[in-house]
Image (cartoon, rainbow, N blue to C red):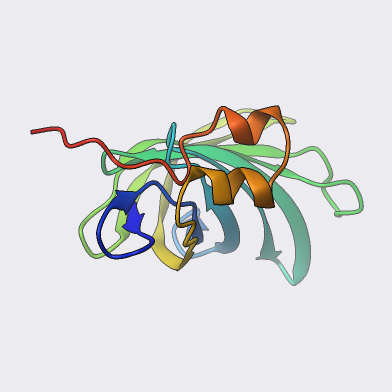
Length: 155
């Protein structure tokens, strides 16, 4: 959540780079996701280099209050299309690092796997106000979004 014009802090989208190792360091996954500041959810895509294969993935999850979780699915055209794996809710340290537990959930169950990695912000939108966001993203979803709205103090 950043300030677009310096005087009023406003909700802004963030692009995050997530690097995760499933099975320890055995399968590095790299995702680019867009974080919705209104509800802490994100969506995006990624790639994993698994045994020399490059699998494409979609990812949905949440990152709010210092906790991250997700579900990732290998996309059609991958060598293992439809495979699903997840990260259970995991605390993220101030430096962006995390280590938690995940599982393969489809086509078989493999629970209790270590997932470690990092999360970092790579870009932040700069909508001056909510109207600027709606103008750039027409439609009912944008109109109902908090993006560009002033952040209310929690004090």
